[in-house]
Length: 479
Image (cartoon, rainbow, N blue to C red; front, side, top):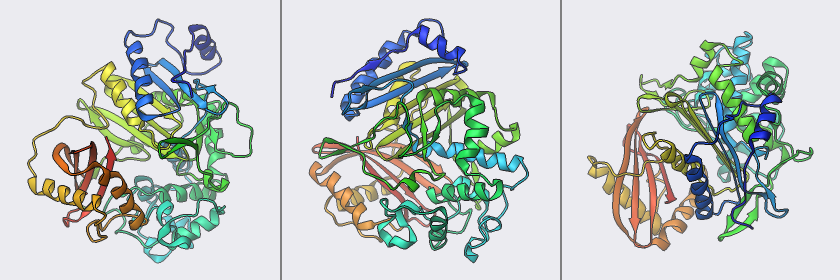
């Protein structure tokens, strides 16, 4: 692999794209900081061993950058360009949310309708679940990718083709994890089911709704549902690292690449056209966009910073909307700083990539005052008991001694997850220092982010505590 090949888009090419109906491109010379952005991206690619990256930056209605770095296909030495097609992962949820709101505007469903109105075979326990709960990850339905009913705790069989009805029936068998509306917990199942609902109320596959009413009107010329059999020009290959060696993505059954929880093909140019539509609040009525960007209110009255397919935060007291995606050898991120009228899009073709770190580095170069997706500076620690608890969890995890009782809300296969913790932490030795980087309330939970300095490396740790004091979320990542 050559490191790294960068594709610059000339003013002539960009002007032609704009005339062809694609996003308007700034005709002036690139900002001086673009050279720093390019150097940073190249260096970060090497640190993360990412084969290919596409970057899109837009501000004030203009595309400032649409650059490709590295290779979209390593075997054929094909460079990444703004036309390169990446998989969306969960960034695709924001498109599904728009498709749902189109049905709302058409009078075919309402946000507070019970899902059983459209899914009549659902269990009685689902009668309290609404369309809004599915959109906001507050339904209590477990994530099908980790606990599909017909596969037991091992999760979904990614090599088996499921029909839409089979996936729906399997979801019906999943026991609710909490009372609908009482907590927030990310669940791909909710968006899969939204795709089913869209078909039942519109008579169309959700992908066809998107093509006709979103992609085509916005000039997203190459956006589409994933297809393994179709000829897709400029399609990138997805990769993963196995013992540090680059391998092709693992094969997934074709039907699992068509569900509404994030199964789209999108290029940088498609994303920039999408951003232009978001800026102008196209496609939907203003009240529909307002609903999309409203944080969900839990039964306790507290809000969680998630709307319909977007995490909703603030940067400098102004709205900051963002979302990531991860699927089949691809990782993506879109970050929109509304107060600064800045959008940063990062597309990568490596399962282990951390696109948020590209976003953080780019925002540091453009404006260091912009909020970061991943905090990096220590803050005062006013919860020493929580810190001590984290230290104990890390020690147990590194020794392979974690118990399910310590992580009661952990989804999926506990044994496999515990082994991942051990494989990451055991080689690092002992924890020498724990520094608190972030502390906030997320709905009813208290969330903490730490940097754990070990003998032989540093790990970022996130933990959330539920109102009952139990660990609601626990995650570790090499820093």
